[in-house]
Amino acid sequence: MSTRSVVIEVKNLYKEINGRVILKNVSFEVYEGEIFTIIGGSGSGKTSITKIIVGLWKPTRGLVRVFGKEVDKLTRDELDELRKKIGYVFQEGALFDSYKVWENVVFYYLEHTNMPVEKLRKLALEKLKMVNLDEKVMDLYPSDLSGGMRKRVAIARAIATEPKLVIYDEPTSGLDPITSRVIDRLILTLRDRTRSTALVVTHDMISAFTISDRVMVIKQGEIIAIGPPHEVMENPHPYIQAFVGDLKECLKPKAYAPS
Image 1 (cartoon, rainbow, N blue to C red):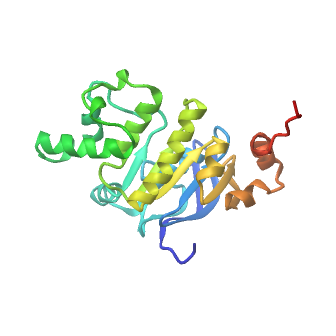
Image 2: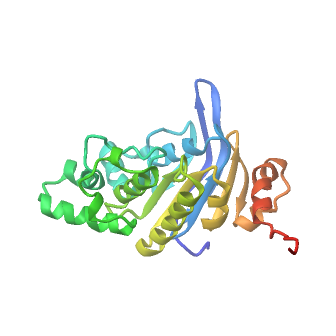
Image 3: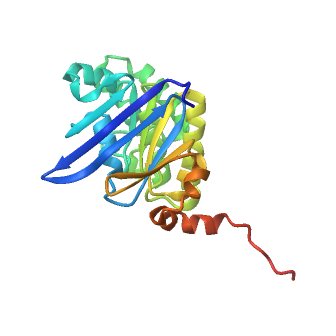
């Protein structure tokens, strides 16, 4: 793993808001091509990390580099250039209700280019097919779609600019278990097809421990463990065991009494 290039480098990261420490001495690296998942309870600091990575928040202190660029030192134009390499899937999808599906997918190009409509629709369809949707949804509005379909449209939008890093914020939130596993498989497939890197923030244990190359557990802004899923699952820390206890139970082979 260490021979791969580093996409995200975080060292001794602290974040304070109104005197309250949100992140404490957080350090980790995300390598090219891996699926790196951050798990933790509500308010643990998971999403705060992603906000700092994409430059929405500045760290109180510490180093955050993405593709070798120190994020909080970038000018507005430099930050915009960096963000072109990053796709972001928001927790609630964040689709624009007044735009059709195809317009949502190619929203970046609608806003920043003069690309003809025919070419934009072709691009939108190409990305929709990558998330297992087709031309039937192109001219629908987000309100016409199921939760799982809206999530897939959000992912199609995130990959429309062919980013090398995709950040997924609670990608299975609000979805039923079957649809959640569909999204998990999609994250894996897209990583492989696009040769991109994925940073996933979730509290979905099944997702975290089945799609990830490495998992980082965070509690109240501090890292508890980082490692391959099987190692983290066996970590004796009570917080981790409380998190994975139900998952271990689910994964146990069931004994059936003979009829």
